[in-house]
Image (cartoon, rainbow, N blue to C red; front, side, top):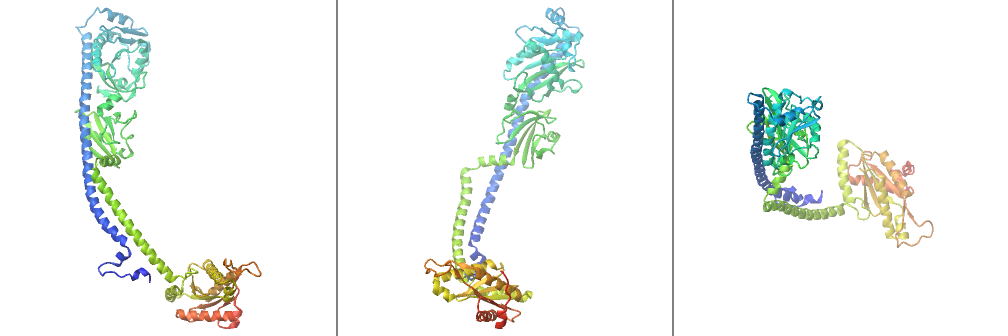
Length: 584
């Protein structure tokens, strides 16, 4: 029986509480921690909901502000488009003005590689190119019968574009591009760049995307982000087509720098969140990311968890919040027309980081301090209990172990025999035992001293430990007398084991103790032999430990009588002398 099973305790306290006091501490502290955790989680949940609600409110406000800015730009472009269409219609109608020398001079130079129409009051000139430059360009076609009307309208439009540009210093270029092969832009660009600009206009989405075959509904649209002409600045362009009598006559456009659009949509308050302005196709017009990224498209560039959420679903709902695979999507449609969508994406980690930043510091300190105090208390109790447990285990070890050899003592050997005997009887298995005694051990003590004799006993114990199975139990019963319990071993197997031990003992040598007298002959090492008696419970009819010990001891004595350094597995001296020799 283990020593700790004998501890007394009150009837109302379970034995487990006495044996594991740290568990009692853990349970008590866990209940307190659980209550604190429930309260803390509730507060954190409410704070998280507040963070998300405020963030959603911020997106809604930004959407309203963005709507106001976009509507302002839409209004300007709508006015410029309507003004351009009215000017062209007027110049093509009965009220057209004739005899304009500047118009006629520009018309006469229309086939030059590059030509221009000066505009009074210092406004940007109208710049055109020859039909040869326009060859192969799908968006341009020289129509001489419409050119005079287009030029006169462009000159008038130049004044309006100049006023718009000068009154909006923060905005980019205002441009009118005529499909008849000329343009006017603010601020003006060098004249020699005209051919290159015309070709660039033809390839740019803000012009090419508004051609009749690509824009049958004549919509106003944002162009995808692109690099400004001869510059590294990133831009997007809001453009609208100009139609007169159902004929495409050009495009009015305004460039907006990416940084200005980013300022317009603002930065999310939650650190780590990203904000985007999307069109109905899912293309990101602008994002709040610090790096200038272009060609972002929903949902491919917004996270794997969002790939099953089409942008049409967001537009159908108009506004709201989704939580998919650890990622929040807060969205708000911009404007009554709903052609743009303001979207914020943020991870759970971003939300919890913000919650942590907004958590009350004193409350957070309490949450941290309480578990720390509980941990310290638990550690103290655990260390104290381990100390007493180790002391108890040490006492138990001392009670069951021979202090010199480290082998089991007689008490432990007896307990082990009871268990193995019961198992052998239940499973009908053999159970054998060996008795060992050092031959002429008294001579060792007399010649080399008791300290050297102790070394011999220790060496014998080491041989036993190294030569036996894990299931076998060697023990020191007293003095130079040892025993080995061999569960599951038959008489033949036990005899073979005994012979192997005998051979190993005879081959062992021991260094004498430092205070031993010097040897008279030999190498100065101590050598010894053992005699062994073997008993087996079934074969010898032994039902108790004392009976087996008596049989094994009797045969041990017989081995000594037969000349020592041998194994005896029978009671007859002749059988002992003829014991089988197994090479170890």
